[in-house]
Image 1: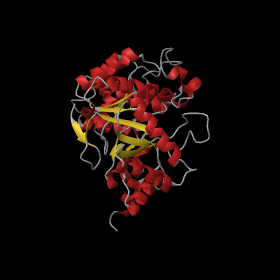
Image 2: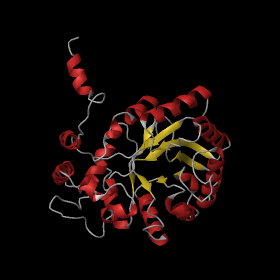
Image 3: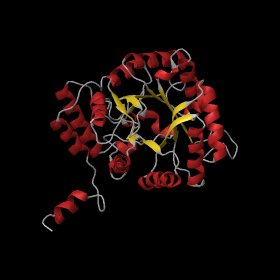
Image 4: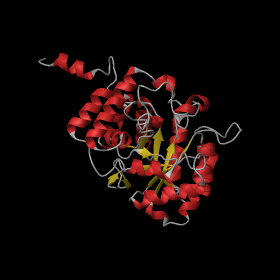
Length: 337
C-alpha cells in the first residue's frame, strides 16, 4: 500500500484504512487478530474504531492487539458521541462526556494517546464552542494528536472549522463521511469543503453494506440469507433491500460488473478503487468479517482504473440533482456572458 498525507497535516496514513466495527460483534478475538496482522503485512498502518462499536469491545480487541506491537507504528483513530450508558451524560458532545469518553477509550485501547479523535456525529444540544474547546484541550494535554469529524453536513463542518479558526483552537484535519457509488451526494458540499479547507476524507461504507460487493444481481427476488442486507431492516441498518431494490441500483451494478470484468478485478475491488481515484479522498475504510473478505478488499490497492472505466462508473452512478447543485447546467447557461 502507498501512504498519503492526512489532509494538510504531516501525518502519513496507508491508502486503505482498516475499519473495526465487526471486531467482537461478528468476528471473534482470534480472527480479529488475524485480520489485523494480515492488514499490517500488506503495509497498512491506519486503524479506525469507535467507543460505541459493541460498547467498547472493538476498542478492547484493538488494544490487546496493540500491546503486541510497536504502538508508534500505527495511526489509531476512534470516536465519541453515541450512548455508552443509561445516564443523561453518557451521550453527546458535552465537555463531561468527551472527557469521560476519551479516558475510557484510552483505557480500552491500552495506550496513553489517540492519534485521531473524531466526533461521531453532530450534537444539536451542545454548544459547538464547548465541544471544540474540549477537543482543543485534549490535544494540548497530549491525550490526542489530531481531531476530526464524522457524519457532518456541509454547513456544520464549515461552521466548526470557522469557530476553531477564530478561537485559535486545533482544527479538524479530516472528515469521515459515507461515500460510495450508491452515495454520491457527499460530493455536493462536503468534498468541496474538505478540499477548500485542507481536510482529508476517509469514507466509510465503500461497498454500501455489501451492495457493491458483487453478490447481488437484478434477477434476485431477495438478498442471500447470509448477507448483511438480509438482516438490515431487522437490525436498523440503512442499506435495506427495499431501499435499493430499484432500476438505478441494478443499472449501476450491471455497469460495475462490466467494468470489473474489463479490469480483471472483482466488483468490490473496483468500487473501492473508484473511491481511491475520487477527488479529495485520502483512505477508504475497509471492513471485514472474515480474513477472506479482507484479502478481497486489499486487492483494491496497487492499481488504477482507466479514465474510460472511471467515466463509465461516474455516469452510471450520477444522481439527478436540481438547483443549486446542477452547476454544470448553470455554467453552460453562463457561457458567453
